[in-house]
Length: 279
Image (tube, rainbow, N blue to C red):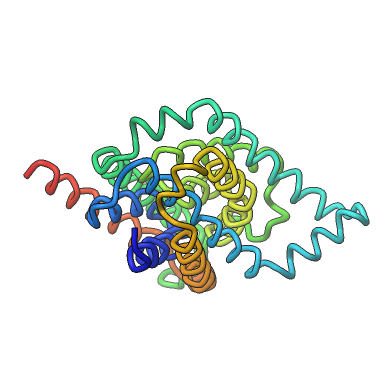
């Protein structure tokens, strides 16, 4: 791998990690398109997630500092958020340890990614249409702008909702399904607003992606040597800068619009990959 390829993959990771379009799926497709495949590249794709993790830390630095300080003061809001993150992370940790090798062996390919992209896109559009119809019925004045029908604020992420979101996150271990999509849609289905579900999804990514990155870096430290330390650093830095910009833009977008365009994009991309595979 050369620095340009590392930077391109870092760009793909940064753009797609927190959008509901699957970063792993896009990285697999990009790696195949660039002619870089194999265990070393698969591990590189996972390890450069650290850049996106750091982007969340920087973006939510005030909240994280406040909640961390609140833990020492045993504040209810801080303890509740920590408990919610633990409950959301637990299902994925168990499933990940049990199925990590099988997932990498069976699902890290263009075909499985394309299938997950299409199915996820259909699910996103269906959920958005149902929520829009519900909000429209609740509107007081015909023709007025329909607000998001969900609950706004991280205080609404109860233990039950957090655990259900964690179960949804397990589905995202199929490359192409998207961790962001699975957790946001799961949050929507539990009654959260899209923006609140996205915020919790981003925060849940800290333990989830952090654990996956550290574990993968340790288990694959020898094959990662084939990539080169400088290239790993380039991928991390690029993914951090790009992801930081994407987080703010995506949250601003979700406060005004829904996920349908992302669902359409997923379906079109998945269909294009299928067409290329059968040619």
